[in-house]
Length: 115
Image (cartoon, rainbow, N blue to C red; front, top):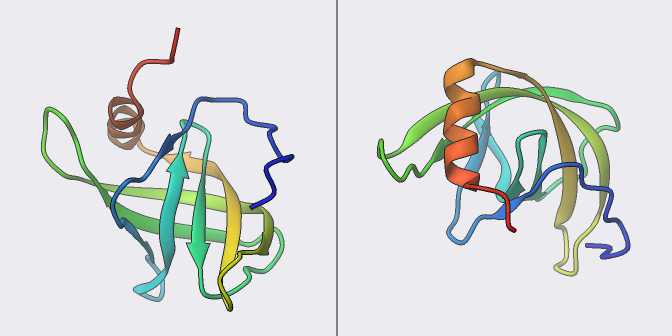
C-alpha cells in the first residue's frame, strides 16, 4: 500500500485477525478487512475491483460488549492498487449506507479517538 496516501478523515482501526468481507449479492468473499473507520474501509483481495463499483457487503465484527455483530453496509470503491503479494490488491472504499446499529458497532469496535 502506498504510505503517501494519507487522506483519512476519520481514525481507523487495523484488523488484527482475519475478518472476511462477503459480497451480499454473490455470497462470495471479496477480501479480508485491512482497516475500518466510521467513513470507510480498506480491504485486501484477490482481484482489482471495478473503479467506482458499489457493493453491499457483510462481515462479522468483534464487539467488546455485545460479542460479534454482523455488519451489513453499502460501499463504493475509491481507489485500488497492487499489493506486494502476487495477485493481491489493496482497495479503499467509502461507506455509502449503514444502519444505526451497524454504525454503533463500528464506532464501538474502533474505540475513542487517540488524544
